Length: 374
Image 1: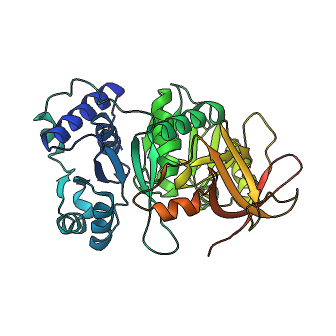
Image 2: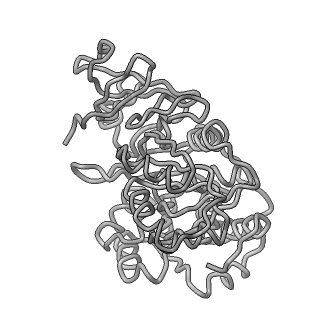
């Protein structure tokens, strides 16, 4: 809306969050729940937790009491940040897990003013955990993917530089949920590490998004296929000025070729489609801006990442045949939190088994065809 947060203000506020955490006896390496929608405070608390040496546990603001209690208990979180919109589930779930809640409400700024700027950063190594990202697994309870500082830093840098070409003059439209890996890496962290602006929309609505595109001169729109389809359907109604848009970024599911073509025709900006998972920070492959794009393809592995297609015996399949995608590189998680057996099953030999089935064409482009696991 009409709120503006400068990098200086983000620096100041996140530093005070780090002091608040120290006052609450949150020790380096301890997880902290972050249950906020796409509002500026998400970035403030997210970076504040990292400055304090803590581990961020991003949580969907729509989680119910039982789910909140599970996320906090399983991660070993020592505190939860939530908004009044998530009440009473947030506080009740935290109470069941024996965790205090800090409500991010109208009094949050005054609360931060009570704490001095933290004098510096708590030292952390590349292999230390930065984020514990719970996967919405299709079977059983969600598992916490352990993402390190190196995982997230490399992935954000690759997205910002080799894929999107982000710079200080760019404006990224952040309507992907920041508690999800896609929005966190490709919007929040990629924009921050390149000095770009990010304009936040808490809940996707095509009419609102088109108005924000015009108002803030958005240069990059990131979304899932249903968002692109909705924008195409609404693009000719209000006739907003979206001439600043130079790139669309799609992930999360396969983008229908017709939607891709209609969006590019309506908005005059190409779409880069990519692929990844929570366990891969998330970016693994993309249609690169300096190479031919292939509609319906998830592209080729990004810099520093390798991808193979394996059969049920763990052997590489022949060219053109279907196999399970296996990934190795700087983006692959350290493992599943407190799930040694699940970690060994997912990464038996340094290659992460995704459960996605794909084929690779003669140019090395991957095409997803199915899921190995229902």
